[in-house]
Image (cartoon, rainbow, N blue to C red; front, side, top):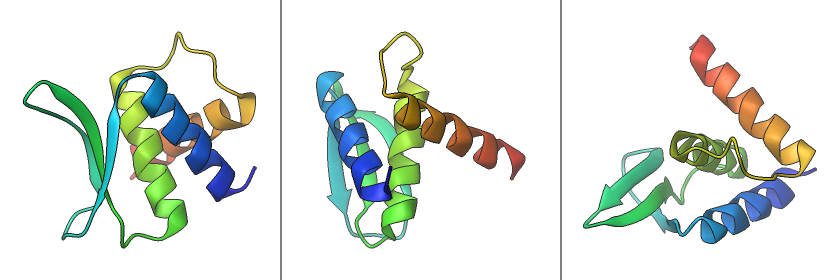
Length: 88
């Protein structure tokens, strides 16, 4: 799958989980947060597509998606991103 396809799948997953995604400008990468009882993932829209996809995957993993059905390629991408981040 391409990064565009994975990003689209992750955005749909977030929507199904009731999590809003906001693409904003700023001096940050992004991540998961709760703002006045609203669950959301904020992502810097100036990031490259691959990095935006990575931030979204990490945010969704933080919420907990272990029990949800995901396409194997999407689940593998999320697990790979978590492993990559853990190494740094």
